[in-house]
Amino acid sequence: MAFHTRLRLIALAALLSSTLPALAAAHWEYAGHQGAVHWGELDASFAECASGHQQSPIDIVATERSALPALNFRYGSAAPTIWNNGHTVQVNLPAGNTLEVGDQRYELLQFHFHTPSEEHIRGKSSPMVAHFVHKNAAGELGVVAVLIRVGRPNAALEPLFRHLPRAGERIIVDDLSLDLAGVLPKSLGYYDFSGSLTTPPCSEGVHWMVLKEPVTLSSRQIDAFRRLVGENARPVQPLNARVIRESE
Ligand SMILES: [Zn+2]
Image (cartoon, rainbow, N blue to C red):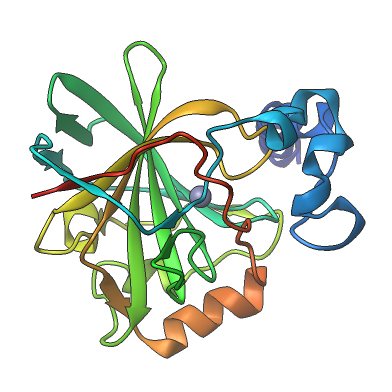
């Protein structure tokens, strides 16, 4: 019994420490009174959601062709912790998967999904998007968006979609190893711009890289996520003075 109790306490402590920042700030949703158009009013720490001028997501329409540095993904296989935080399913990863772009070196922290895609390309969303969230040594975030359309099931993501946790659940699946590189498309051309987190507190200074080539998931995989989480896309935000660069 004592052994069981200790295990439960450790789990509770881990849960508390990981949810404390969320508890300290206001609850938010995608629709209704706590929905995206109200985020800026819900909490003082969310002010940038309303007052920012470099907010994400955006509709990618006019671009400038540029000699952008190549995206060098050094992704391997990793044992994830899969967390349904009530807003998305987030796949937390141990250190060791990196992205090098120009003189920047980013470490992959986690990836998660939105349905439909938050980013629009010339006015159109995709059924889904995966956001790969990285951080560099200076603490700056670099997010790679991989658009997802309906097609063949994605073998690299199949094990994940077989183990989608319910809201509030955080699971580790024994022997589950995700082939992260297998999630990426073949062609790594991309759009590049600065933006923000797409969830409160909507902090700016995020380096966005949206891959031009989508990957596919089966409609069953996409439906499984949508049933579990519902629509979780922030509406597109004004571009303002930003320039979207597009790799050649
Ligand atoms: Zn996201």
